[in-house]
Amino acid sequence: MRTRTILAAGAFAAAAIAVSPAPAQAAAPSCLTYKLDDRGVQDELYVWNTCKHPVSYKVRLANGADLHCDYKTPNSGYDKWWWKWPRRFDGLVSC
Figure 1 (tube, helix red, strand yellow):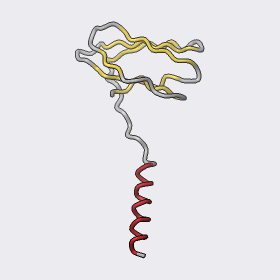
Figure 2 (cartoon, rainbow, N blue to C red):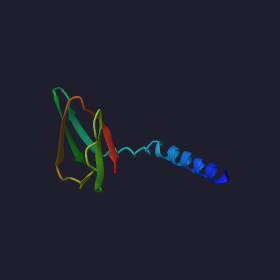
Figure 3 (tube, rainbow, N blue to C red):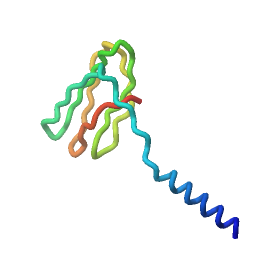
Figure 4 (cartoon, rainbow, N blue to C red):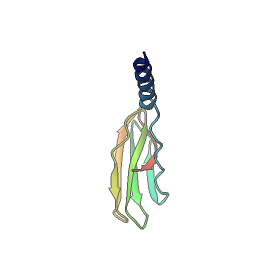
């Protein structure tokens, strides 16, 4: 009887861990600048690194999967990202 109680408690703890929310990601530094064109069916985002150091960042999207992590060196031009509706720009985060 005691073994069953311990197993049940262990299973409950594992279930509680499995459904806990993922940790929040830190916002990208403010020196990582962007321009968003969301006037049409396809949104376009341009990202520049005006920081004095390299930055790793990810584009967060609502209503869809986030874009992959990218590494941007200072003064290296811009990165262009695009996606179609119903996904929507939700910010830049560090990764």
